[in-house]
Length: 603
Ligand SMILES: [Zn+2]
Ligand SMILES: [Zn+2]
Ligand SMILES: [Zn+2]
Ligand SMILES: [Zn+2]
Ligand SMILES: [Zn+2]
Ligand SMILES: [Zn+2]
Image (cartoon, rainbow, N blue to C red; front, side, top):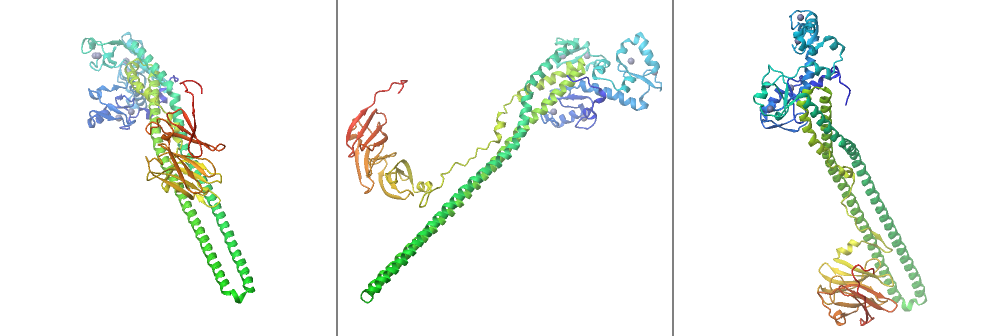
């Protein structure tokens, strides 16, 4: 608890209504713990009779059934205002008329029971007369005001109990718990509050203070977490920016790397083409020289024949040279297209980062405004609670703590809110999927996307003894195929099957190399075949010929492997424990039956 507050230390602004910008007049406290003048509240209710937004915190405030009277009088603020009033009168000399004898002499005290200043004579009289004994605890010496050492605690002892609202001639003696802890007089206990739950103010104040302290303790448990989140959210904003910049840097670097590797491979191609071109020219010169020599030996006899040969060499060289030029142009065009595509991809990444950043900042704003509003509420509740507790006035405690406790419950729920995703806010995921990379080979550049564009999908791949590649799978128009291509991806030979469901091929055919000449191809439905690498020949058999009880609906080929030593082919089948071993002519040499494996038994 803070040290006792000197009333003279209280800031003037603290006592100012933020609707009329004047000192509070009959202040009342709302559910959000903000306070306004009764008159200002009445104006707000006039325009919004059911509910309105608190001008300070924008919280929705429901108007009580009995209107402005339903909002609690702010006893705490009233005490401070009373003190300010006395102090102000003291400053303005003319108000210092003695309230007792109306003499215009220097006053020396203020009586909170008479609500007026006392001259020195009346002050002494007040202190000595037995009939005025009741006034004694309520006399404030003006010396104390001048010394500026009045605390709220002292003031609450000086002040009288509040007046009963129903019987303003009476002082309140009890608090009615059934009527929101309203102070009432003894007369009330026979009237409208008959049979209500009534408490002695000291007793009620004590239990209300205990209740508030418990609530504050509950709030305190969540305090660190909320402030941590607040600092986390501030940090997150910076991270959103730095991570975006890093992400863009990485993408740019990757782009530059790919671009430079493309350019160096392009330079290689051009250099090789140039060398080949020089070779062609040199060869042409040699040929011409050689022909000239021969021509010289037998000019007259066969001149015409050699002339013709010479011209053939020229034509041939021109053709080759033209072909090389076309290749050079093509390679240049490929490289340009790829460079353009790369730049487009980088642009796309950049746009995505930007939009992700915008989205993150939006979410950040939401989080930030939530946590800031929670912190503002927390500070408002704890400050108000500390003020009320420090006042020591039983009437304030009994009457006003209830509202503070009501504000605490939802606040605790708010403080418990899950903020774990704040930390993840600054992480960039990126929507751009990794694309197939460019690969450069000796002769040209192969782009895997290009094969897809030709309408093929690859299901199985194998390699021949001389480095050629075998692929098998399906085409986009639902035909099976097996293709042999060179290292650069150019198809050398191909066999296209009929539509799916045929015996020859079916979706998901598997291939494996048998020897230098043959590739075994198996399809899931019913076929097993040998594909000739050099001649494109094709020999096929039905699996049903040697697998007993073969049924297309129940059994399917699962995998295929070859043994290059014995040139045999091994087939694995779904829903079947056998391995079928075939020879080079697709005859079933023998079958290996695997032992049954029981569930849970180690293999
Ligand atoms: Zn006001
Ligand atoms: Zn408010
Ligand atoms: Zn007097
Ligand atoms: Zn008096
Ligand atoms: Zn009363
Ligand atoms: Zn009552």
